[in-house]
Length: 420
Length: 218
Image (cartoon, rainbow over all chains, first blue to last red; front, top):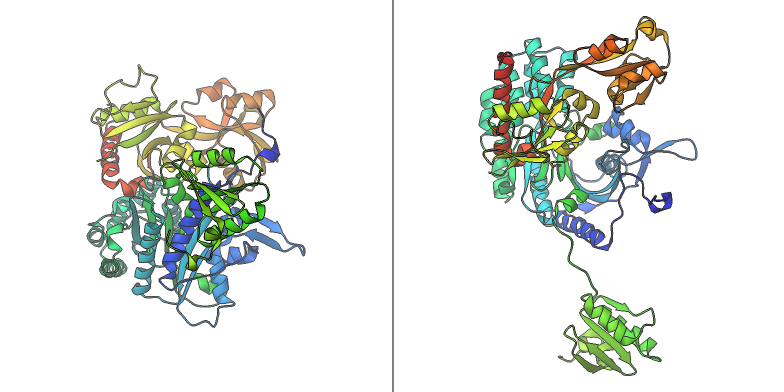
């Protein structure tokens, strides 16, 4: 059987059914609820930005990874591939004079153009937060703690945050004593995580041996002993400063209750043109890709004409969803309401009164007979089936027992209710 | 310690990959030969192998369905997946070369656009793009050397081991794009969430590969 175009959705996009949508809302709501308690307030930016804004934020190479559109005047637009650049633009424009630090949160769909055939999503939801205007370790500790709490709020099991620092790699690279073209090659190989090529290049370049050893040991520089090992492998001022910073962060994270979920991991390689300090990723054993990523990016705002240190993270909501096992529990409303001839308006008033008590109520709209409505509702797990009959309401419980109550008792406002 | 899954490519690198795992003591000698199973248990319960098509191999590792994998550098270059490439396992040496029919070997640089048949469209495109030469890539899945003979392409970009296939099809190598051997690759999350178990396998295979390269006659 061949599916027609109208039966399909574009590669890399998803439909979410009610259970999945509810779960996504719950995850996003849980994270936003958590960051709100830290004083972060949500902002909304347009899905579309000028291409120039996004390229300014993400670098020229980003142009290839964007969905682009042409505006009426011929201006190039693009769908945002993440939200930090949009927040940076906002901070540099409408929030330029706002008192610092700014604590901002966001949630929305982001879009990435990719070649067809790869299994990756091209549209997915992201939720995150940014702390702008503070260059301190306290700000970093706050962001890492919130990242831990955000993953806790999602309910994902067995997660951990790997915490590194780009200063370590920077220090190693500076200590290699290589000229710029070779350094560029070293950076490219690190981005590709090609440690075979890296070893080969460094062997031919006669770079400083201790730094070569440290670079090649990078993938294993993680866990409790990583900091000492790093200090031993490369004893330079820059590396010492990083080790001190991470040790101070450890003390703060212990106090903030986040340390149990954090592992020092100097092997984290994230864009070190963009990040300027700590970098971190959130993982769970159930999934081969990170759930969350973030770090300090003190240079981004400069590209928008203001100088603001900043630190933040974003959660890949759909990855949290796919890390969860099993289907969601079957969902059913708390009650369904059917009615006899002549009692339609009474049934509407009854349903309204029940909803006012925070119950989920569905009214029969297909004109089916009571037995059919009640039987089907009880079978799919609805709490109660109600039949409005004049001034009386027949209530069928899940066990099949029925009793009758007066309509007047149900529609009475919640406060005046007699104990039942 | 949880079990580590290693993805092994069927095809060209299968024998070398199995040999490496046997020599490292993870698999019983020849255990893979008499079976059609796609998942093989290791001898000591610390690893299991899954056998995947070479073209799918990095997908397994990138998505974490396998913690580690053995992949040709040619595939790594072509697919540019997000995996850690940690060890050169030393076997499966081959070269990616550009080749043309004998009579065109001297003149190919003057033709534009060139039509090139290959199993490596991205590597080929990048090569010509870097040289500013315009090219039409024809993506194929096998018997690439046939393409010039039937007028499907001007030349080919393909792997060569001995060069015999090229010679038999009257093709002449004009440029080498890359050299490739088998590499040990690791999923980025496995490297962290199962660090000890994964590092143990990596080091054992690294030792094995080093010994082998040091004594090529063995």
